[in-house]
View 1 (cartoon, rainbow, N blue to C red):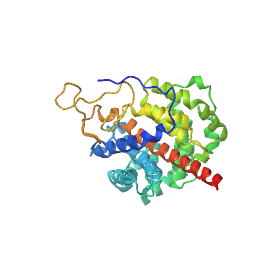
View 2 (cartoon, rainbow, N blue to C red):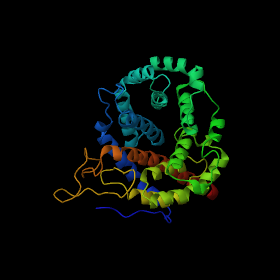
View 3 (cartoon, helix red, strand yellow):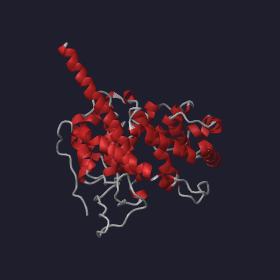
View 4 (cartoon, rainbow, N blue to C red):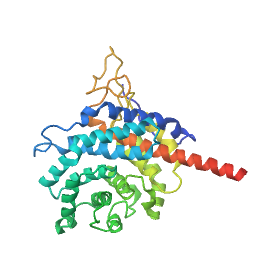
Length: 348
């Protein structure tokens, strides 16, 4: 059974806060229940191993769960679950020793450095890795590695997290990005959308330091996020929708409540009962036991129903949904508390 396309023509006040706790709980619960999908294979260091289906999912688990833990209250169940998942990922990389081996084999590859930076941002360190990384980061080759501007911002943020000198000025690199150039909003499409979201992630340390966002980019995003999100929902781009909502939570100042109230109930319709969210396309509800329908996926999710999607088709969008939900829930809760305090102060 497929669900109809969701759009966000307008939202009811408080609609986002009414769905966000459940969306976060289910999405993070799915990731916790699917740890087996993130386990690295024994041959992960071999040249034939596909990084995108092994190290990439694990690195994303570590990074997004680090932010979820930073964005949730210490007494919240999701806070504990996110921390457990980060430690699970750290065990998978042998407390950083596996990343050190990767860096020795590919000394100018950015991905071992960026994965390690996710752990470093959590306070997990490996002395051998940092010693080698510091040596490599001091070379001319490291400073002049050619890459897209938004990817270079990711490396700069990783350097900041690890504590190495920045190889380039972040502001100059930002100016070369699609977002930094304040590109014509009608030129927004899939690749530019993902470049935009990751530019924001890198300049705001994964949406946790909104004050790093320049004022002109803040104004540009506040103006154009609503139609972009609406277009993504209409075309069932669930993964990109989640990333854009994380960007909305990274804006300095008051959160865009109208956008979040309109979009979150619509995105919530894409979440399966077990917590999984597909990257794109029609949503599929797993058939009840005994009924005809799609067969179960590789495991069961946070709920009791079997997964309607293969792991690699939904792990990223599900993690992104949890990540964005934690950020938006924090911002909206803080905004509501601030508004209540202002009313109380005015009454006094």
